[in-house]
Image (cartoon, rainbow, N blue to C red; front, side, top):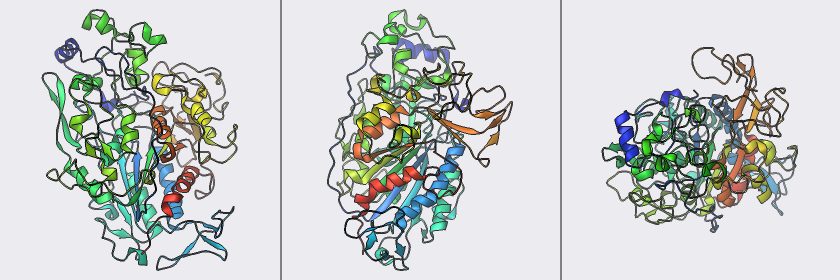
Length: 620
């Protein structure tokens, strides 16, 4: 199994008690590679009406004086190669921010092969005659890294304090580099004129670009790939940046249920040090699979049973053809409770628990995507007491607290005011969310064959090709077949007997043995990222006997990603705030600074989208 470290079992009496209480309506597993999109948590398994969130209204850009960049890095197994590609792209991203390109001084258009501005020792930028910098050089930059491991709240499968299993969305400095001590992020703050009078960061200021890039690479390299298999990609970002009152721990009760206890003061202190009220905030999420975590208070606060490794009950017949129907539920409720027929291991592989849960099991315990769209775009969000009153649905419209992303000042301690914070001046379009996820890069380019540049804006047709008509309700009409979540081979894609490179997007379909999903995309690994897989111990895509289109014998020569439908849906619903990129790079050959190498194309689009906000940078 891909992520066996999170495997657990519950005491049979506890499991029976939960079942008889009507709360064991959820499926889950630390190895869930993909997840369904809805958040269906009604006791009878019916689906509440929740249309996709419309694009939020764009507010006027307000001046910014700094940039805060949060990297959310998936640390589940098989992510090591992608983490290294991300680290390789960091120098180019930093260069784009600190040494902007030169544009025509009259039109503002950047010509092809435009030079970069020259920045002197005082921070003044200059360009050749008739040209001007696209935007002022960024003189104040924070970069922090968190993982996607939030453990298994309410269960001890991925317990808090277990190394790399529950990182609690804290800023990570696993290699203990001096540049990120004591708070966990690195700071670019050279002795330029515009930095005179700025407050000192709580970490050493850096003024050398190469040293800064190296420090960020060390932070990424320390994340590792041994995290909890319940990948909380969206929730980790929300917890660090948005949750007004982040819990210290989730405690199981005997009634049954769970209870949030305490306040995570480490997170509060890190957030207050990292996030400035007038910054441009960039969130970059790197992941190779679908968001796979649960709301601990779904199912009358007993959703933590998803961490229990037991076969689940069969769904009603309606689920196979109409999972959104009120008649789609678990046979537990229709056929004798705990004695109801259960799925076989081939029907309910523990590694696939989050794959289309409502259709396969009759219930779903994930957070609604509106939680994250609202969290990254709106000035008010619910505090944890108002998110889900006991026994009710998640309340996505509650306006109880100031969103820390849009607050003028942030608390440092549990004794400070956490909810009613003064609203700051950060505008909605100064928060930008980028996903490097499971989608072929060819679907993001300017022509149908993937030969053009990455698009800076995606059309409705582009989004339909990526995530279908309404992925929240499993309507994938119009989607490219590579983006369909499936255990079985997908027609008309090349089958399991074809060449490993038959399909330019993903190679070919592979034999999953009901234990895996088909890939969205694959990519060739250079020799420095290839690895010889162990034959008996440890997880590797190319262990002995593997027939995946990633292998040369037991040597892994290609990387892969699964469709990341939930993360991409949030990007879509954020409108101009969202940027979609592929985890599968076009090329990893040649110069790492070239425009097509690795994740450079995505970062180029990202900086281009940031330009209106960057042009408002205050100079001193």
